[in-house]
Structure formats: C-alpha cells, structure tokens
Length: 285
Image (cartoon, rainbow, N blue to C red; front, side, top):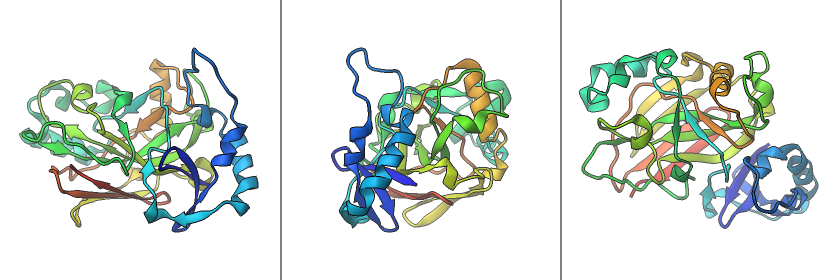
C-alpha cells in the first residue's frame, strides 16, 4: 500500500497516477489529550488504518497526483536519525574533496566509528514544500537516500528482529550546508529533511537491500547507485540506532547517500527516485 499526506493534511491512497482521498480512515485513530504520545499516532496504528482504508477506498474520490501538494507522509516523527558516509564511494569522495569535508574531523571516520546522528524534527518537509536554502553564500547539497519508517517501538533490537519494527519506506533528501560546524547543525535547517512522496508499506518492498536510487538536478543525473552498496544495511541500521535510542513508531532513519553529491541554488529542480517507491520532485528557492 502507498499512503500519502497531501494538501491540508488529507490522507491519500496512491493508485497509479491518481490519489484517492481516504481521510475518513483517520476516524479509526484513538484520540489523545495532553501530554501527547511520543510516537506518530498513524504509524502506531497503521494496521487499523490500513484496514479502514481498504473499506473506504472503493468509494473515495480520485484526483490526479500532479494536482495535489504532497507533504511528508510522516507527520510527527519523534526522531530523525541519519547515517553518515554509509556508501564507500561517498566516503571516498568526501575524503578527497575539501569543498565537502572542510577539514571536519568526522570525514576521517567510518560509519562504524562515527555512529549515527540526529537532525532537528523542525527540518522535516515534504516534496510540495520545497527546499528553502538557508545560506545562499555557502554550498548546499541535496543527498538522495532510502528512508526507513519505524512502525513498532523497541530498544536494543537485534538484527534478526529488526525488520519486524519497520512499517515501510520512503525517499529522503538529506540537505546539507557544507562547512566546519557539527554535522547535525548544518543539516537541520528548516526544509533540510525532505521526505516523500509517500510511504510504501514494508510488505511491498521485501528486499530493501536491492533498490536502485538516483538523483538529478535540472535534468542532469548526479547520483546513481543501489542499496546493495550500503555499508550498514537496513537491519543493521535499526540495530545500531536502537542500541542507543528507543525507537518509536514514526521515527525515520535516513540510510545514507552514494557518491555524486552536488550543489543546488534557488531556481533549481531536484528529482530523486528509488525503485519500488517512486519519484520525488522538489523545487529549490
């Protein structure tokens, strides 16, 4: 199932090049009072919502996908977790290019020694929101990534159980201002965590370790690889993240980007694709 959030927080079921408005399925969600839960309510109740979507979808109105504004399919992640240098080819290019590493000590580390990092949840945006460059006088790169969406709470999760905690997948752009500051600081500006265009439930992608992914800027391909080249795979990233943090439904994990990172500027158009998920189209301003 492909679920999207569009326009003013409508829930959509993606059906080819159309989207069915299945917002009525959200009535199946429990209601809460302050303090609100630490998780994303929809992801915590995904099975219930999916069952309700199947009931209301046949009668739901359908509109062309290109007529709606797509938001992040995850509305309330408790954490945005990201994997640095998780493709050897990107690690190599980062080490070789001072415009990327800026002599930041982290560029000398591997993912096993650097660990993961967090991005501000306020950096979350959807493809329809676009990228707003915070520092136009500094190099800013969008990095295509497969994104894991957590569906079940857990901590110290072994890799043999990791996939049981995955609700699904989406495409991410980990937008980065190059410089000397801490990685999390430079990657946490508003709109610097683009997620979308929709959530593909895990049952539709049984092998996330064999997905082609690519990124182009203004029609010119910059990145192209396959998730088989991840240094730490999906199960390993869930295991690594949960060794330090309790994972909650709605937490997202950016899995890392391959080589070919390139700068953008206002007016550019970024297109990112991951096989089995779809294509993410984002305007830069």
